[in-house]
Length: 336
Ligand SMILES: Nc1ncnc2c1ncn2[C@@H]1O[C@H](COP(=O)(O)OP(=O)(O)OP(=O)(O)O)[C@@H](O)[C@H]1O
Image (tube, rainbow, N blue to C red; front, side, top):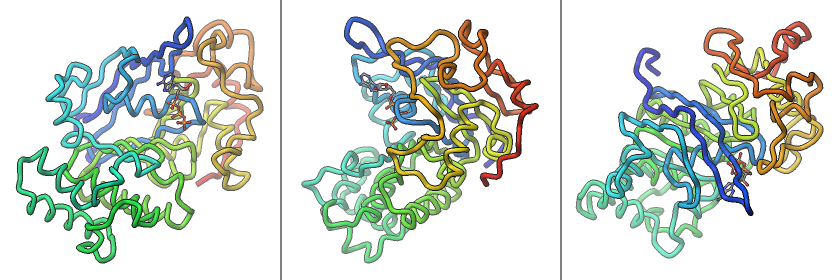
């Protein structure tokens, strides 16, 4: 990663609202994100915290009914102002996405090699043979065994781990600059998960990709990310370099995430049992700090206002009125 280069992804004061009954749900409230080429940012938080909605907004994949505010600049383009044709080029050539379920990326009735070739042909105007050649190179690169033969597979003919690799190949087919990853390893068993994370790290170095990686698993975030942004109820409540956030977790929610992780590997449904209570109903969020009702350090001020960003150390911030008091109680957490 080049620490002096300008950001390739920059979102400012991003908001996403959905109509819900007679009111609105604010799923993303004033998120700021900045990412340099070759850098990985993990968006970490429990279910419903707004991670996927944020990621989809960067891809402009939110439903038409959603109302989006703020600004998104990617590789110098104003993403929210792209015309339909510019948006088609943007998706694939500038930014690409991988999912937990490769079924979202592949059409089950076409051979995988044809789908990769079609994507390259559509974006780059090359011949089918060229598209196929790119597919073969990518299958070799993501280490799919017998790549020539595997290109002729239908998606259901591959194992879960192999389909995940094929989806990564498809996502990289047009050499994007930014990869958006929505829990791509969550459904895989632990060994395959590590292999896919290592592969993503290698590809990132090779292609200089910037990656935004959504996960509910702090262990996965530590494995893949340079920086971590912790989301709660649509806001980033803590962010910083991975080592700073892990060594000195400053928001009570981040501490809860780390404490729950310290109890062992958690399944998707049993995560975060260490934090009592559940996230707020976004159609009627509590006043002030949304984490307040679950927080052991709650004081009246917390219900009065949304906490501002407070600097913990350079490049590390948390949104909490109690940072000073918490720092005094801090015990080093050895989660690395
Ligand atoms: N199309 C939609 N219409 C209405 N509400 C939505 C829509 N998509 C998401 N939401 C709401 O936005 C909130 C944030 O959802 P989001 O999927 O971003 O959470 P997440 O942190 O990615 O969690 P998960 O890991 O479960 O996907 C949730 O309350 C969700 O119900």
